[in-house]
Image (cartoon, rainbow, N blue to C red; front, side):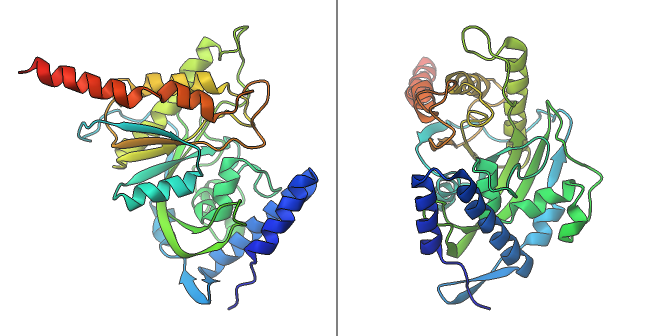
Amino acid sequence: MTNTWNAEIWKKEFLLASQNKDRNQLRKLRAEVFQDTVTHVGNSRYVSAGKTIQIAGEASMIHHTKFYCEQISSAHTQAEMQTIVHTINGDTLVVAKSLLDEGLHPAVLNMASRQNPGGGVYSGAGAQEENLFRRTNLFRSLFQFAPYAEEYGLDKSTDQYPLDRNWGGIYTPQACVFRGTETDGYPLLEEPYYLDFIAVPAINRPELGTDGLIVPYLVDATKNKMRTIFRIALANNNDSLVLGAMGCGAFRNPPAHVARIFHEVMDEAEFKNRFKKIVFAILDDHNTGHKHNPNGNLQPFEKEFQNYNKNEEEAQEKYFYGRI
């Protein structure tokens, strides 16, 4: 078994297509990565730096995947702690790996398509879920809920896409991350790692008011989606989360408002201080600089959460000294 993937060559071709603004070539190159990923996952192994690396635990991952289509019970036993919140200009999986290295048990938000697993991954789309599918075996977990499951050698589940509009979500435990970032040419990693994922879709192009904010009835729906993320994580004993600018790319949600909604849900009694860390990993890319996010997605989230940790520390101090 030989390694036919050359990350440096792919990276050069991708950079050239980017410079030429050749969208068709960019999509073609991304689609090639996914096909290569499917091949390696089908073989349950790949070669990196001359070593054969096993992609382990797939059967367990698939078997223990959970499909949610109703409101999840809010009952949980997770101890209260002081949550630290960060906003980072960083790659989702790289940030999640850093939490693993700290000894945490993170869940990663897959900002998913509601209609079909992987969104436009076959055609080389560049959004976050497609990126995750190119770099992991996550697709094997989600494809069991698609009509074409059997084409991939999977048992077709009785649960099927599309995901429920309000409460839909999928929990995938211990998917294998075995490719690096797009910037690095999707290299095959010498040391793969394993992460839990929560797939929840944002609202696609929500109605906005004259103030540019999401209209109230869709704010409630967005909050329910965020609550679903947090409840799934708590139900599965994740102590930290890697989130993102949910729906603020191709789905055209205004980032400042989404950040504020996240903040409000995080401050609800059910979720406040239930996680050790919540990190918003946000990369400003081709889906930023538009009418709904002229300043990108990172800046509005940084602004919303810039004083979060400070305010929490002050609140803790007041509580402590008030008991003396």
